[in-house]
Each structure stands twice: as structure tokens, then as C-alpha cells.
Length: 112
Image 1 (cartoon, rainbow, N blue to C red):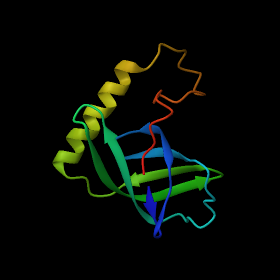
Image 2: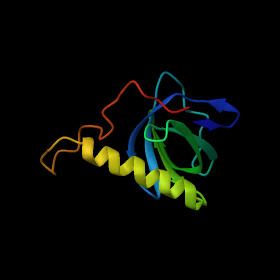
Image 3: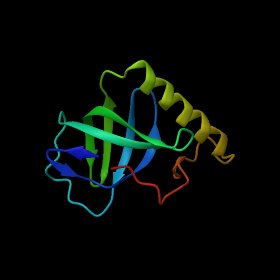
Image 4: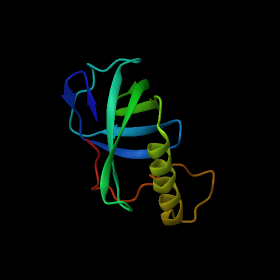
């Protein structure tokens, strides 16, 4: 994620057509503010390429940042749908009341 001229390594925790929840790794996010505009780069495994999405920080606490996507074009929407569908197929069966896991199991794959 690129925000305020700084690059943050992060793990994607949740993804929807409206936004994403990411965990920032090994960085101080005190300089981030609600309303800041950022670029989130996601790896699209199916297409073997990165997609970049413009987003606005909706909220943040500790190392967690909630992002709202801004003006997605048709190609980006299609890519996000494919990523979400693939991750839904990979998600383990679980009790819907338990939300303590990341639906994105590849913890080593970080966005920039």
C-alpha cells in the first residue's frame, strides 16, 4: 500500500467490492489518517499480475486499516470478483460465528 509518500507492506485480511481490510506489518501507522487517499496493489494469482486500486482510509487502529475503494473501472471490478471467488473456494468450512481467521490463507503474500 502506498500512502503519504510511504510504502507499507500489508496482508490482505478481507476483500469486497467496496473495500478491503489490511494488516500493516512492521511499520508505524501513526502518520495515517482517516480520509487519506492510498494506492493498494493486489496480486491477481489467476491472471499472474498485480492490480492497483485507489482507496481512501475509512478507519484504522493499531496495525489494522480499513479501506474504501474509489472509482473502480470495469476491468478492476472483474479482477476483484475473480479474486474473491477464488478465495471463497479456498476458505475452510467454519462456524459462521467464528471470525478469528483470515479468509486469505497465504500469509506470506503481501500487497505493496
